[in-house]
Image (tube, rainbow, N blue to C red; front, side, top):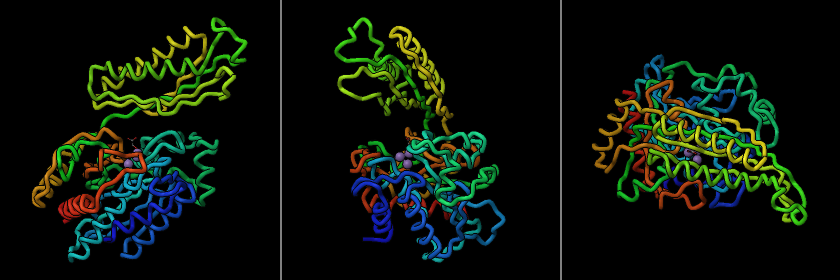
Length: 406
Ligand code: GLV
Ligand code: MN
Ligand code: MN
Ligand code: MN
């Protein structure tokens, strides 16, 4: 087994659930162990490591002109519950491998090259994705970050104290154009590259994500004794909302509108008790901001209509609503040239998943390199990219970083 495959396997062992599934929630014991492992590997090859107060980790290979803006690469290592071994991790450890390969070839960069391990790309703990890159780009201000509450009712600052990080959030934001270029390597998480038998995807755009939290309060009671005309069943209202969400996405004018009710909780959760409360989280995305926003409005109107008709109250919170990212043409061209020179098959494509690059694109020229994953599967224990696919991604990344740093 080669270096990066071994490292990805070791990384997968830092998991709260047994492999092949991986669960690594930000600031958990497993996350902290995985971070320490990554830092040791970086220091072993002489990279200078800096960790900001929320845990974004920068590992720099200093160039011969260290005052020039560096070239950045990286991704995340947090993993949603019972997911796989490759989402994000290929971009972080692939960045490290790319630097090692370049060092071993005798290359010495003019611009510094920096790996960035982003804190909490996944929304699991705090309910919003891309915590690290949102703060780096200034899209999430320190004041708003302080208001974040996690699934255990702890604030971001309480989490930072627990893991012994500093809590002065004002120092996280990066200056605009801190990087001269940023390139993130990632598995596609969809079926296109595999279906078309392609080695590499070059990302030209990242779809616009948004999400809503919906708290529904109805009236509980005895499942046998409250006759149907008297019911205010919060669970049924939630179910009707989830179906409306699906239908709004299906009937959108854009083929790329997708909507998912991925969190659906009811209380008290007893078979002979009418649900008195429900909580939903709805994820809604599109490549076009107009149709995304229209669908978002339609969902909110429908929630009002269903709640009024059913006599329940609903409280809707917009958790995030972000614009799409347009990737930098010069970087797309650079990666395309590298891919052609390597003789790899490729296509330019849209990322329907969001990534930290969505926010990096707001402060510096950005693109992404995708590699195929088996059956397009991701956020699943069977997620898999082969050593050969990873190798091609790393080579493409390495030579792109070289072209951008010389
Ligand atoms: C990333 O995890 C996404 O949800 O797109
Ligand atoms: Mn993910
Ligand atoms: Mn990811
Ligand atoms: Mn993610």
